[in-house]
Length: 391
View 1: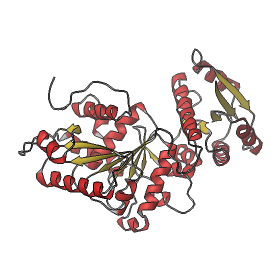
View 2: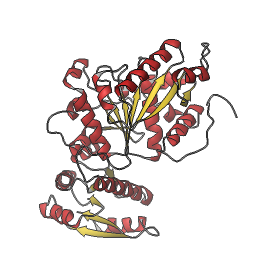
View 3: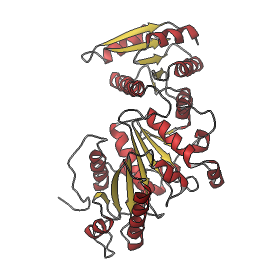
């Protein structure tokens, strides 16, 4: 039976929550009184160890944030939700305190149940990992998107893949930008983050604190930005960056990593944490030759041992004399995703909106869905192998 604790709640919200779960699996709801920030209430919740705790709505935002912060410190494996109006001001504060979500007390029953169910699932993953900092949650995936050459479409692949997965797994997907000098993730999502990887690698930062450095996007993808200034890259070594990625994998089901072009220290280090490595190439000879060389180096270093490898062809239908079959034979891998040439993709990137969000029914969006299903990260749906070919 699922156990839910409500701290500083109301009878009205309890009834609302019970109605949301009516007809499904049985739930037990425990009401924990709190007129404000109350350490006794925190102790009560920790001792009872529920699957999820809802904080509010009969509390001020400040008291709710303090309660969540103390709960997270005392029992990081217990997921917390703040029940309050989800204002733009409250959201980043809630994430920083360790809340999994902010849900309005008058939101629809379906929305409330989905929010609590997601938090319950995260809590179960954390308990399965022993709530050990840096220990990946069971079944979590780290997808490193790599390319030896700039301009191959690596950020396009990383951002659109993250959005595609997040459609079925909202708030369970993080896109981390490891291109420390020239990262483009913030531009791909038109974000103005308050925090970046520079804050995430600071001494003393815990996995729980790390959640406060993520910037949410309307697509339900959470992002960790690269530093604002290229010179700050010197303060972030490969070991620190990989530690952040491992911590993210202990908290979320999917971490997509957009790496720098080539093989810098951070890219090589994060491959040790990757469950999947996605190679992106354009369809010109220099790009294909570069991927062949990169694969050879990584295999000789043993950097791909234990990782699944995937190939993405960008601008796959460009008429440049190389066919998809030629490229696959040269590289020695079958393409999992082929993206056709279209002006719509760079146009979407220029306005800061991943293309799959602008046209969910396009052949490109369907191709990304097929790839995400092939990875086993979303429910499968039949798609054409090559998206530019009509059925």
